[in-house]
Image 1 (cartoon, rainbow, N blue to C red):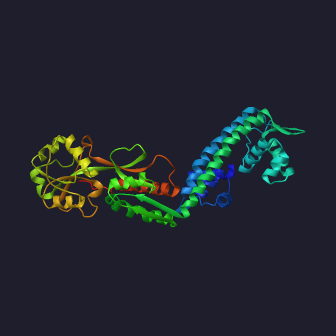
Image 2 (image 1 turned 180 degrees about the vertical axis):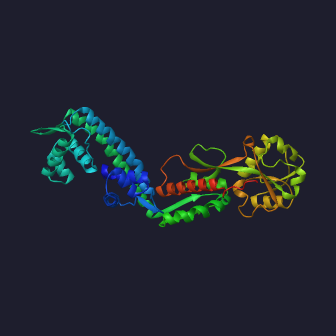
Length: 413
């Protein structure tokens, strides 16, 4: 790769168009397209995809631009430092040098061996070619990088600082290539993860088709069970990650919270007038006080959904009359619709298996802490495979879109 390629890629990302990028760069569209295509061929990765009239970064493209911005920042600082050194001849300051990865590797190899001939052997290039490259670069910079001697070369004062700065750039290029190599995993391989049955029912049909479209070579294995059993599989290293409704933290697990799912008070439509709950506002503890004589239908104790419901009741200072418990959230909802009692359910579950016919759903004030957080859990030790990280990135994006569009939650009107 080289500095010019990174500048062209950054311009296309900024403008979302080759035509606009070429205008800002003062180059023809064909030149910009050719330079970027050569870069893609060199990296073995497609950096942009066309969406309508826009050029949008692929996941590989995002990796290149993120790292490329750091590399370009290093080049900018390097250029400022060279100008401040006053090495360039009058009339030449500010011209700049467009660095290539090859040049950096060649210079640092000469530094390592302190001998141009030995460096040329290591690099599999002709010694005259390496000497010529060094001479042209020193002319461009306006200062000697190496001082020649009979036994080899040694760094000049200017060269020592220059090479130190180039080592930082070399390390960034190396890191970029390592990250791009990880994308090769996305052409084949397997993701294995855990998710409880109910979240899987509403999330996976939205995520897996989109993921398969992007990465058709990846196989997906899903383990579905109760929350405790799935967590043990993840801790035991038998799955890559675990999607869960977070409740309490475990020491050996790293968590990333990425979505909040608010709870609703759910009552039979037939009781709406009698209970007289206020419309058009989120219910507070005072509003729930009128439910003291109402029977509650709940999921079984220790289920995570029940733990949140119990927290709402504690905050409302309400001791419920629990007339019925069941392990099935759907059974709870249908019993409420049949007039058996009232309950608390998260927004994502209100339209999960059946709709809200026969029900009235009231949002709750945040003071009642009626919310559970969707999280990803993975072991603290070890690095998650690239394929799994891409799946989670798509999961987060999709949840964000669902939240904004309102397709995830039922909203009381």
